[in-house]
Amino acid sequence: MDGRLVAGEVKQQVVQHVQQLEKHGTEPLLATVQVGDDSASASYLKAKHKAAVEVGIRSESHHLPADTSQDKLEALLGQLNTNPKVNGILVQLPLPPGLDEEKVIERIIPYKDVDGLHPINAGKLAAGREELVACTPKGVIKLLNYYKVPVAGSRTVIINRSNLVGRPLANLLLNRDATVTVCHSKTPNLSGMTRTADILVSAVGKEIFQIRGDHVKPHSAVVDVGLTRVDGKLRGDVDFDKVNRVAGYITPVPGGVGPMTVACLLENTVLAASIQIGLKF
Picture 1 (cartoon, helix red, strand yellow):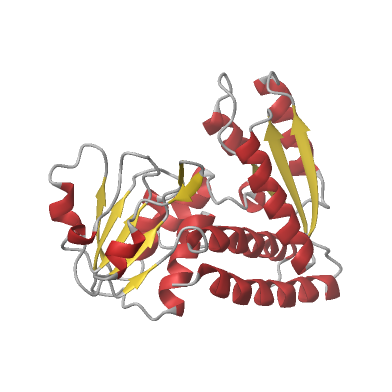
Picture 2: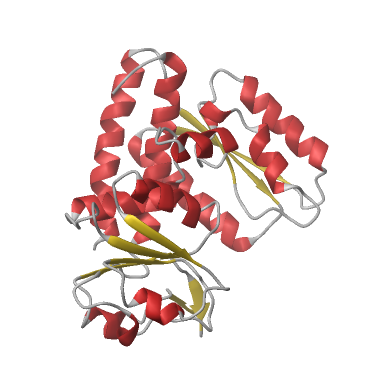
């Protein structure tokens, strides 16, 4: 499943939405916030800003030192909340030690929360009301849809229970009539669970963890969200070559879920802007 291909189609739709917003007097603007100098975070943000420019979304970057206090960070978010020109706010995670990520996420106005992590947005999703949804799970669903992977009635196993991936993805799949099992570090006989999955999503991201060919059900769809660097090379959770011989569908790393996450961030930005002006696409 080619994430770059599908992300390109999502971006084309975003361009059209940007043009519609401009006709209604709104030029969508994404504001990002980075605290500290983590190189991976800086690289991710650079890619997000570049993608925003490509689809006509304006962006601005706010870079704060690692020793920024909770009050100062929340004060900046307050300013972005009240700035009518800012349609989307993204705080790059993780934050440096000492900062409360939950409070930071809750400080963002829900309708500007383009990461889809605010408890109100997460609650809407859990209630079956999909609006601003976490970008990576949203990208996974778009991949499955594009490749016509049957979701309704499927048995889906997710190896991740985080608020960023596992929980929102479980709700998205439940909303589409999948039977969902969420696994984690305390799950016994994990490989026994994965072998039953019609759709397997792994988002562990640890060097010592890998899904092998004998861990998956023949002809299943395997989505690799994990990302780690081994011997200087990016690697996912899945042994691609071996699993590719067994699975019916598989995402590569890189080039699978990663591009979809960025594309869905752009989609969330124009969606947030449309919510703010009462426009329906």
